[in-house]
Length: 406
Image 1: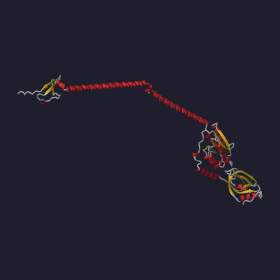
Image 2 (image 1 turned 45 degrees about the vertical axis):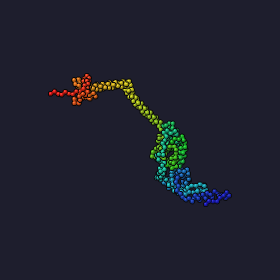
Image 3 (image 1 turned 180 degrees about the vertical axis):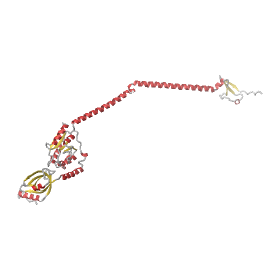
Image 4 (image 1 turned 45 degrees about the horizontal axis):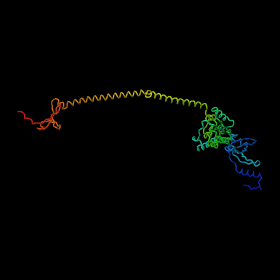
């Protein structure tokens, strides 16, 4: 119950602290999970600082030495543990602490199970999909590097990158890469580099380590921060066999920090060789095309119509003369044959003509209208007639035929 107080009737400090201790005492025993950041043994008591695995929150834990030694294996700095504790408030010092009743180290199997559940959750949200991963720039102007302080991973990345491309620029953020402060510092460095418009790609690098050492890089808040970055992120955590969740959500995974430098920065020697090869290939292609066009042009020029245009005209003139002579010969032959045929027809007409008969001493009797008289019975006495001879005509008149002599 809340106490009634006023400026005129305040409560002494001991009373308020006793009330706080009473409230806290009503909580009873609880199971608490965290990471040990400090461990000190004095006499029969072990003093531990237990830090929240995600948030920047910690609490003091006092543990009887017997409880501490009963835990197998014994917890050490950096270990993840589950503590069965009773919350206490020390009135005399005004401080809060847990009194440990039992300590259980969090086993690797349990950690793996938790990571697998988180991995399935993030996969269902599509954070691992290949279509959301961005391509790295061919030659980044500036590279953001998140690594441990004075770490071998930093040296590997910087030395290999500058060996490949001496002009490459880095902005290095040195942070804690393991322990209780790693998640917060790496997340803050990511946000800082992502906000810098000069940074084209970010590398998160760390050397190898145990599963517990690499746990910060499987933290959900850190992974979601990487997924929200606008700048492409390269994960270079541990060695080839290490696979934190950060590798799955990053835009590119490098097996080692050295491999990250090779994948992010092109090799100037290789690029010069490639440029030389492409230049030679371009020259061969252009040279081949020019040679083909030159051969085609030579072929066109070698054709008779272009090589000697006058000769073509002369050849056409010769063809015209030949055709003209041939036409003349054909026409002359046709005329000769027609003349021969005409002579034959003329001879036949002459042979069949009455004029030829008249020339042999015959005459043709005709009436004045030109009708030929073929029979004597057709003529009556006194009918005018015309006798046609070879050299002219003679008009006559018919008389009665004398009677035939007996």
